[in-house]
Image (tube, rainbow, N blue to C red):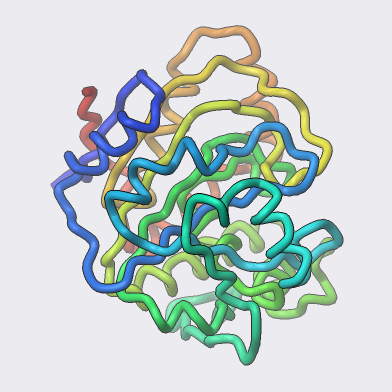
Length: 287
């Protein structure tokens, strides 16, 4: 069966919740809600008020992990302060999963680039996960969506360096690029396995810059907002978002796709599909 991807061109907090309900999966137990808190200075990240209806409905805890590079999120103290500054703590219960060690080590039996993944130890406190992703470009990955949130997003500070460096954080900026994309897919597979597939994915195609929300200085969005997607399949939802961009006829399309293609962004999807925790084949259900 093809994966179902629910899609609406209307972008609103209420529509996120509507599509989440259509996906038909109630997340059980204690729910982690993975967001991108937005680097200090970034103008494009999706703010907490945008996510409020679905977070309130799920009754989960907003979770984040520290970064592996200089900035306002690379220590728990700085990250906590920014979560407050950006309004997350005013609206939600918030937890930094790797605020203290040791990390939780997840095995990757089928990994060819990395054989383990390091995530925040407090992931063990949760039973299911809602993955809220801002679909946009990315300086290294080409694009950022559900697969990046599952991998780099859920990885601890050390784990982020481990993925980037193919097992050696000292090689953060110098590792083979396609192998890094494959390592991200492998890390994502380990999170899906650990959560026993009890996940729902939301990708919002809004404020689509070629740069990530991790950039303190980011380009402004270059293509128009396109919509919201929700799926139970992280591979299908990312593939569907890219297909919508490829299929559109809007100013800025070439600039956005140059970022995706120059970084071979599709390769994370190719490797993820090989690992078999989702499918590139999907049914797009427009709402």
